[in-house]
Length: 221
Image (cartoon, rainbow, N blue to C red; front, top):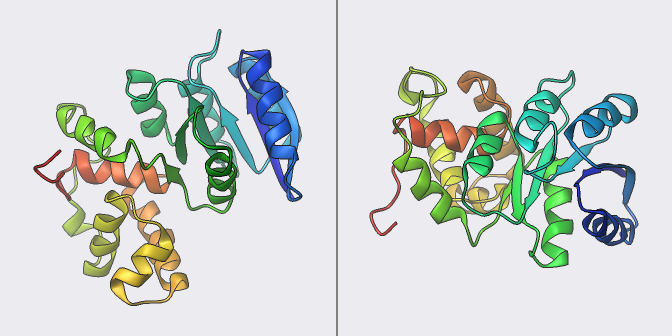
């Protein structure tokens, strides 16, 4: 059973997400918070497998809540569900360690699949927005990089290959097919890669890669 914590300041959204997720046999909503402070308190009390957070909430917003949850021991994976596709809140949440990002108007099956992926440690990014988000990151490269070291000095050639494919938005299964290796091999490489980069999630690794120019956004972006 995957234990889910929700946080959104809109009662209708909380009720809708609760109904959607609890209709699945392996998902249980263990708490529903109205803001970030309540979400953090409930997370520390209930220790959910995943937290689904809105970005814009009164008091403690989604970015600070994400940063706090990712700093827990063990970290609590965060899936961002928001109505805002491209704004400072979204980029701030990704850089704070969010493992996934979806728009609230995504199809129900997409949201359910995202919860499963993030809870399994895979992470997810709304595919319809991936290229736009990566393009925006390239315009923000004046930001302080996650680390000043280049990927070539930190990662093996195979890890660099996998990082490049992650940056294209590929799943573990797609990467395994592309490189003609087992999915378990991809997962092992990713697990070793994250601590080398000093990041907590696959998406944060992608942020690191673009900020440090280890991979480049295609020109058509």
